[in-house]
Image (cartoon, rainbow, N blue to C red; front, side, top):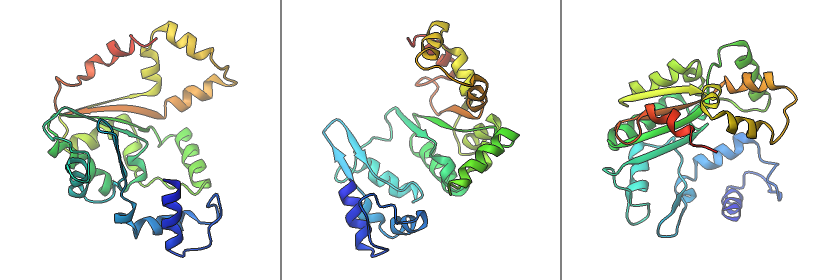
Length: 229
């Protein structure tokens, strides 16, 4: 993939490339990606496992073509129970693009669940510091409007047509773990400032949205976490 990316970037003549590609700015890279959608599509499959590359800002129909195609895609069935995972993905998309995505998945996968990890409570003072640190690294977060609270995170999924949506801060999830598990984790590496860590945990969340409660009811979360060793 690194070789493929290098060749694609070189073909744009954006600027000379070095081994680590550091001489290209973020904006230049984005411009390259925007003009090479088709060429950047990549599929790796082993028969039981499919790894697909895709720009989620594109239309849902384009995504479905990739996911469900039996020729150049994964051959997914819309009627099968499906779990979508997103780890800090939607916050890097515009509200319009992320809404289009989660609405399209809800409409086309009636037996799906969506497990979502992202920032939350970003409107308080600690959240403002986080945003400032992101921007200091030239990292804009177009989807921050949905990250004000657990309620706004849940609301985006309800508006997109998901039947159920429930979010928890990482602190809330952490407290659901057995005390023995928390003790083991906390002694893997000593933390200099536990208070700051807990503040950070209050600013990330896990959200579960479902269309079929039988597949993944949110009431089972605590029971499932209790089995983690």
